[in-house]
Image (cartoon, rainbow, N blue to C red; front, side):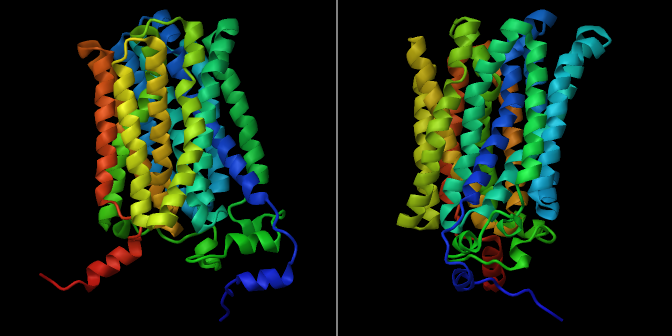
Length: 458
C-alpha cells in the first residue's frame, strides 16, 4: 500500500529558489468578482421595486413577501450547496450556480408576459422566480469560503475573506447606479436581462481560470505553494487539501457550543444587512422623500461603506488574532464592528437631516460587514476541512433572519414608522455582537468533542 507524502516547505524551497508567483491574489480577485454578482440578484429588485410596485399595484406587504422569497430560496439551498462544494470542489459548483441564478435573473423580465390569473398570480410568479434566484446565489458564500481556505494561509484568513466582502460592497455600490441608469433608458425589464448576461459571462471566466487547490493550478510555482502551505497548522496532504474532504461530520459540528452561538449571532447580523439589500432604496424614496435619480446615487452608499470597511475588518481580525490570540482576537473584531454598526444605524435612523442620516446608516452597513469577515474566517478556524459545509449552515440561519427582515421591516415601518424599523435593526446588531461572548474560535470541532469525551461524568 502506498501513501501520499507530505509536502514540506523545505522540499519546495530546495527545488525552486525563484520568487513566489502571485496566482493566489488573482484567485482572490476572482472571488471578489464572483461575489459582486449576487448584488445583481439581491439589490436589483430593491432598486426596481417601486416601479414594479406602482405598475402592478402591489401593496408594501405583498412586495415584502416578494422580496422575502429570495431569502427563502437562499436559506433552503445553503447546506446542500456547501456540502456539494466540500464533496465535488467549489470551482465547478460555483460556476453552475452563477449560470443558474443569472438565467433566472434575466427571466424576471418575462414574468409579466407569462403570468396568468391577475395580480395574485403575478405576485406568486415574481416570488417563485425570486426564490430560484436566491437558491442559486445561496451557493456563493460557502464555496467562496472553501476557496479562501485552500488558497490562503492560516495567518491570512481574515484578509482572504475580506475579498468576499469586498465583492459584496463593490457589487452593491455599482448595482443601484447600473440599474437606475438602464431602467431610466430602457425600463426595469431590460435591466434584469443585462444583469443575467453579465453573470453568464463571469461564470465562464470563473470555470476556465479558477482551480480548487493551488496544487492544481498550472500558474502556481513551488515557491508560492511553499508559502501557502507553511506555518503552524498547515498540512498539505491530499487528504486535507483534496477536492473531496470526506463525509461532513454533522453530528460533531452541531454538538459544538461555539458553532451554535456562531450561527445564532449570524442570524442577528444578517437581519440587519438584509435591510440594505431589500428595503433601503424604498426607505430613501418613502422614508426620506428623495427622488429616484438621487436614490440611484445614495442607494449605493451602504455598499461603498462596505467596500471601504470590509477589507479593513479583515486586517483588524488577523491583527487582533496575532495580538490577543484566536479567541479574543476574533471576539474583539466582532464587538468593535457590531457596536459601531448598532450606534450608527440608531443615530442615522433618528436624524432629521437626510444627508447626515443616509451617511450614518450607510456607515452602519459598512461596520456590519467589517465584523462579518470574522464570522466567515471563524468557520475556517472551527472546521478547515469542511469550511463550506459549516459556512453554509451558518448562512442558512442567517438567511432565516434575512427572510424575516423584509417582512418585519414593512410591518414595523407601516405600524410605527421607519425610525422604529431602524431602531429594531440596531438592537439586533448589538445582540449579535454580544453573543460572541460565548464563541471560541480556538475550539475546533474535533478538539471540543475530544474534550467532552474525556471529561469525567457528573
